[in-house]
Image 1 (cartoon, rainbow, N blue to C red):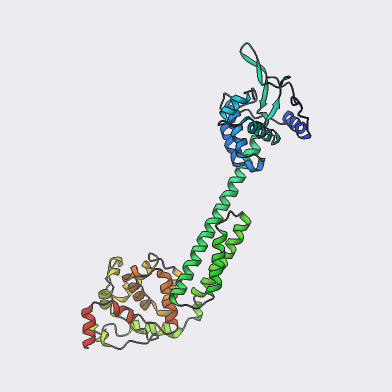
Image 2 (image 1 turned 45 degrees about the horizontal axis):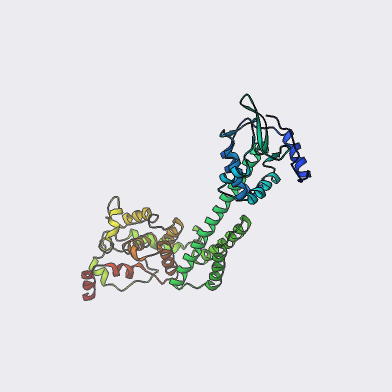
Length: 392
């Protein structure tokens, strides 16, 4: 098909943009075939990069519908619908709006005009084939197919990055609020008012449409808030060489002495509550009676305290307690007391909203000498045992 003209009909002048477009059209390679609907989808994604709006995309979709093939090749790229027909396919768009959006597509370099001598759009046929046509040329669209595809991919990557940053910000905000709520419930001192104000400001920002830079800055601020909360609520565990050797020696001594002469359950329950630093053993029978929910998790049964330690070690992750929190609890309380504490927590797990935070809090109290597991265990014993203890 011949392209016979490059200048517009009527009073429309030749512009520098038009000359540049014609020159580019003559030098650029035309791909053999491009799927027109895939091309339109890519352009829709990258519409802002090409300065086209939604009505202009509707007009372009209507123009593409007049091209009979699904693929746009090197030939027969001029379509010549009348304004009335084009308006119908553009969902009844008024002709004044239609002309304005056609001009947008031409200015964006996505279509070109080939106007007839009288400005009408038509085709001249020879033996059934179109010899020459006057109308809208889709060649610029095809020539820009690769650039449009790259732009669409860039936009998709940018949107994915924004989505990932927004998700990260939401998760950080949730972590910060939950940790702040836990700190307030447990009565732990800290700069909570300042952090709460920062979180409220972040929540307001997240209601807006933010770009990658703004979201990155917001994530950094939220991450700093979470780090501050963790610094207060999750103190670093002591290094192995800094741990008290006396505690370890006492723990080993208690575990290795008098294994065959354990106190009876009744005698033990009648004793006064020990200080946190003594860390005495609790008879396994008492633990099984107070905390029966741990029994199904004991692969080899609970016959001795070491069985309980091994069971608790494999169970803490299922309860949502990190290895860091668990090892710190064992380092401060001793392995057996930490295991008994975990068994008690499992027994009343429905009432504990944050098992990791709860164990961390108990560990802090134990480090200050304010916590021993025996009162916690005694509260879980059946009433008959409690009555026996009161009579003793």
